[in-house]
Length: 496
Image (cartoon, rainbow, N blue to C red; front, side, top):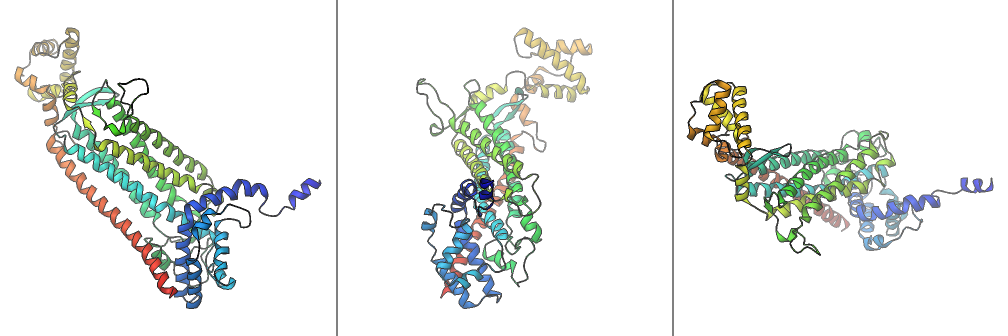
């Protein structure tokens, strides 16, 4: 009973709580939030004075106290239990540089709740900049490679088997368009994240006449969040970001796997630059595509982290709750950072890669993969149903396999005689042209098809989108850099 009584009388925070929660959270917060806290304090103090809630002299005193903070010393602090977390340590340090009453006024009309969700977004923002930048760069690499290979024929695969001829440009544009959709998803998530919750208070705002729009402006957000309850309770600002990141990572893994297969000596389709392959300690001939392996490994790690975040928050209360805060936030940042690593690495590895175009062209003429066009040609030339044409060509393929040859004109006519009871009017020249891989891709001029004229059109469209996204990201990053500089300059001016 004495032991239980002693435990019950232990003051917060208990030693086990310090050891297992506060110490780790303090270390994470120092790494992630010092700069964000400082910007939030500057913006909030300036807004309070502009709204007449504190005096100009109180503002000067607060700004000077904030300016005197020694972030190197704070970073070096070990958790000793004399403060609960980084927020309270900063309040202590601010109070050392001004009188207690003035220091206390900095917390007017705000809560740790709205501070937290604001600094979380401020921390996530540059990580999303980086990921968007790497995705945009990956698409550019794919487009640059595609621009060189509109006439490079290669086999396309379905169910991991040779299916039909295509071109390398068509193949790479498929990936580029996919990354383009990933960029649009990331941009949409970013737009929903780029709003400021500060001023929501604990969850219901405040009776003080604050300006949430002004604080959002000072912090470089696109505007304030709206409903204060949702500002604190909603977590879709990061779940949407991670959802779009996860979609990108799934696509990235498929791309990496494809290039891994193409790099196998049995396929011999792509050669990575020497800087992205590794030798063997025992086998002198080896060129191991380790960069692509790490793309998959890092991407899988990042995808696992996004799933971990979703698992942690999917059934938590709609309100302020620790499940989505200190312990979880580092996992969010790690997921986005690792996603960026994987995307950036793939772009770098592919940038100077070369393709074995002669071997790809040879493979495009093997395994009967152009005979779909032969069947189509028979339909057009003979006015037959495709099902009948399919049967004729299928019998021809079987006969050629048994004979160990390609489909000859004689084999085709024999099959037609078996199916139709008469030979085709199709000439030998027309039949040979129909099974040419080059002809196969050239006749597919329909929207989204393989013909060089169509892939050049598609490349132009994607290049325009690339330019738009590059300009958008440049503007966003420049705007945030300018707002950061403007906030610090304004604070310096108001300090006198």
